[in-house]
Length: 169
Length: 169
DNA sequence: GTCTATAGTGGGATAGAC
DNA sequence: GTCTATCCCACTATAGAC
Image 1 (cartoon, rainbow over the protein chains, first blue to last red):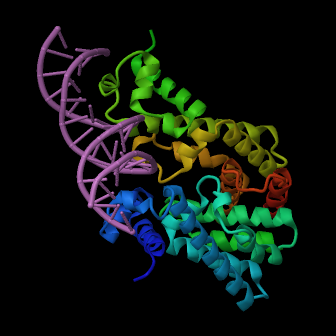
Image 2 (cartoon, each protein chain N blue to C red; image 1 turned 90 degrees about the vertical axis):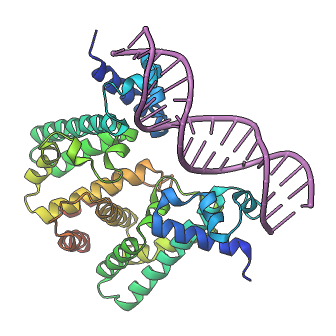
Image 3 (cartoon, chains in turn orange, brown, yellow, cyan; image 1 turned 60 degrees about the horizontal axis):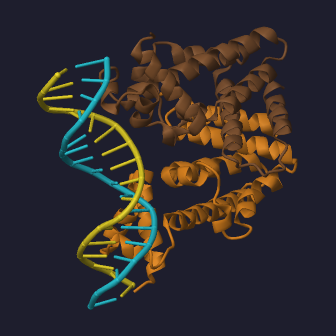
């Protein structure tokens, strides 16, 4: 039998990914494991600690994906990074929102994880101001798409291409 | 005596702007007006209808600001629009979040308001794909700044300048 | 490490009297 | 158009028994 903390995080992640942030409650997590909510507090101090684990998972997965994308297409780094970033967010919309809404609980995350996630972009775009601008563009594109903010007939692919081209030139 | 619906919206807005979305409850709104929460339902069908009024206010104010910015500095439209957009969001962070988090309640908004808000940017950037990319950049910059996502020492002004320059060229 | 019981807090919304 | 009374919901978290 796997250790409880891991089971708890796995259950939390499945709830978040399949039903969204509103479903991520201590009761629902406990239900999934066939135990009662108060029992969770023997393994995690509070809900924020569980959420921090999910955020750390997401950041690590994005970091992996970005590193792989950069390694596979180093000749057009921005296009590769953008496609990988968007694909991750669309595949994990609720986790992406949890990771990006509000301030990061930095004190609960592994040291260096945030920097590792940013590293592929920083390598591809050495100027820090430009890198920040590209990040904002990518995040804006993703979150507007997730929130259904673009018109239904909008050509999101082309907007991505045009934006990344502007930053590549 | 002003009509109640207007008073309700005014109270809601003050709550939202000064204390954030968590403070925007029917009970708190009623408290501000010296009445009980159930009385609000004689004027609005539900909370979402009150929120929609706030969103409509925000969209109209951004539209006004963008139109003014474009009129005053037509020779560098993107810089003017970007500065105006950022200034509005920083001045009204909670309202900006309410306006941009999640799907718009389009069925509760005045016809044409969303389009009017977008119009100044569309005029400045006729290519629709490029306009969408600029919007994503601006929204991304704003929301990352509001959420404290940039490092404390980040030079946000320069990131804006670099990003807008990329889209102007 | 699990349970029961419960505290404490809050929310949106409705019924019906006045 | 306001009130009182109330429903029903949900949540995080703790205490203490086992």
